[in-house]
Image: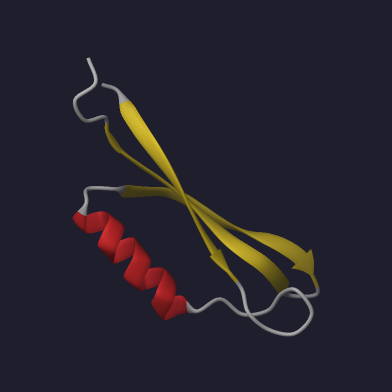
Length: 68
């Protein structure tokens, strides 16, 4: 089976280049992509130390469409 992949980046807001991730925004984006048959493979943050993050990166996949 052939796969296609997609990367979703959700920035964190807060003080000095990092902070909290909007969990509801991430959930909404994942649900919208799930409706398009994307499946979450993994997700991780770009840890800046001291409990801060700059981005959450999610990798998704789905069967390739129309590509022989």
